[in-house]
Image (cartoon, rainbow, N blue to C red):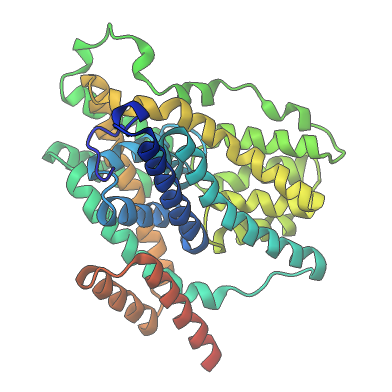
Length: 406
């Protein structure tokens, strides 16, 4: 069902023919699988770029969600631990096809990246070095910037409903530029909007269930990695370490780097500094979720089984948190206070994306050629509505050809 305004998809009892309902369900699952397999294979550029490509596909092209619904899910991903873009894929799958869709969308977004990273890890272990991907990214990054900017513009038109929300967004950009913690920015924005709308004093007696359980659970989880606190490497220890990371990690890839270095390098000595930096580099330059850094580390430490264990460990909490919090998102709009907080979080989320886009743009637009790629990409995307995947592939070709003629 395209553009279902309530976010509810038909149960079997909603249709006259159960066979038709089952066929429609299989069709939605197939659509999700094909879309997220493609995105998992071509979505370069980090979470902001992934989310922009999802917005283009599910809001603009397919009409599965409205801008407002997409924004609410985006805000929800920022309130729970784990990889934002992967959680967004899982949310979309759940909205489109229920619990089977949740599993299909998330798995299909993760698997291509995990296989690509696993193949690179195999070559790394066998030959002791990483393939050169600088030329590829040289052309991809300018195209990605344009895709993100288009998504930001469309989402901002829905999120920034008043001048007050615009002011909150500007304040969030300033705080992010000054290095304030991302989670603190989201919290401050949500509280500020709730207070400004005069909601807080009318809902102080409201039940605490208005909050996202995933956030509470994420903050209260016990140190699941305690079983891994040993000097000797084991697959069980590797699994519990990455399960802990996936359960409590908020923030960017730099935060992930800090987690990995503290335990894997300094505490247990399972990796060297050089191996850790190589692992993070692979996660950054390959398509799909940055958390597939875990796949690389798992392979280096324990071969194919280590890669599987680490990948499952770090992504499993994302499925759990979305399953717990996802069904509550539409209901939050019926609560004045929760709705105001969500408005603030949505604006803050876009502000954080804007800061990341500015940083990416400074690194991507290096010379006349990269500026040209960005301009042509903008023309093709805005004027001719070219699919963002083709822009990424075209940018990759430009990067490879420019390296070949140098």
